[in-house]
Length: 232
Image (cartoon, rainbow, N blue to C red):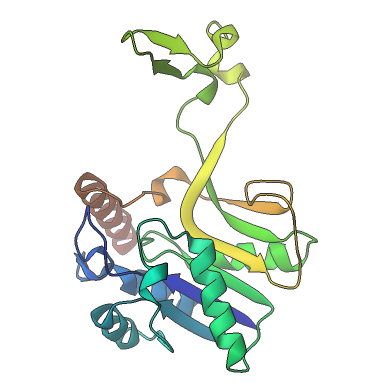
């Protein structure tokens, strides 16, 4: 059995009430709930929140909110792993157990069901522990540099300065959309390690939504994608 867990605390500071703020006509969290439903993968889709209003909105769009998350797990320092663990433990105490859990961020309006399905199928057919969304870096990380205390530049990999871009190994980053976990398997490695399967998303479907500028960019991306869909 599979469960989707959507973390959505109420205390977003940089974008107040972010998880239920209107995004192209619907509360932002609605998109994550709907993509989980559309995938057909889950026996249960829950939202883990400490906020009554978020809980109400989540239920309106088809998710369950079987409990309110305690405030000590709703601050700026609590990671997704702790939230998922709390949700699974709470449900286990009520007699519910699952084989696979998928944490889906409430800030993933560009996520498509096919990538959730790909992640689940690849994880189920493998001996890996995790499968999660990634995307390629838009530039070679090997030619990046920092600004020193003296306000000068210093390369992280000085020996790569003269290398051609096409000769440098491609790097990837966490796309911040979903994280599958095979609950019956254990690992001592980090998620970005050998026990994880990367599900590669195109960069035009990936956008963090942490600042007002991010929000504007994500809305523009969403509108362009759906305008093209409507014309096809």
